[in-house]
Amino acid sequence: MNWIDNIKNYIPYNEQEATDKETMLYAINTFNNLLTRENPLAHFSSSGYIVNKDRTKVLMIYHNIYNSWSWTGGHTDGEEDFLHVAIKEAKEETGIKHIRPISENIFSLDVLPVPPHVKRGKFISSHLHLSVAYLLEADEEDELKIKEDENSGVKWIPMDEVRVYSTEPDMIKLYEKFHEKIANMMELKK
Image 1: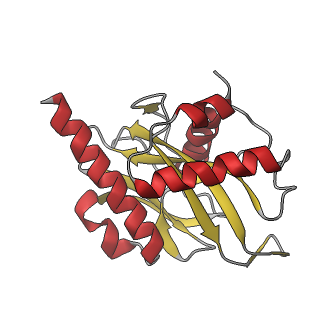
Image 2: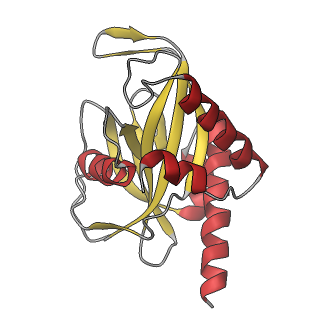
């Protein structure tokens, strides 16, 4: 199945995801350059929410642009395999070697505002990330490494403390949604 069909077939978890899915489909029908940063208004990104085996901790990075503890992820840069991008970014940004998708299905669809910032000496205007997220599992024993051009910290954070570490109110809401979805998944497995 191609990336557009994956988004079309995604079943939204709540009203926010349903609305964001419609926004993504509108963008797909309007623009032909959403897989690259050529589109200055919006483009796709793929992220991984990385949990430990027990689903009690999240692997996060201290993101230099946002000055906050954050999940991993990045631009798709023309790549149509969003899961591959999420795993690649997770490995690059954390140094983790043993990582796997809990499911190959999309975990969340979110339209995320990106504030204006400077990256590698270039001013980047505010824009939207059309975020396709995956739930990933990593080995807590793996060595962690900072990716100095993007982050200045990597660590496992107890899931119930994420709101203490994140300084971005909109992202805290997103992480809390993820935690709710994970708790629901675990409840279904009982």
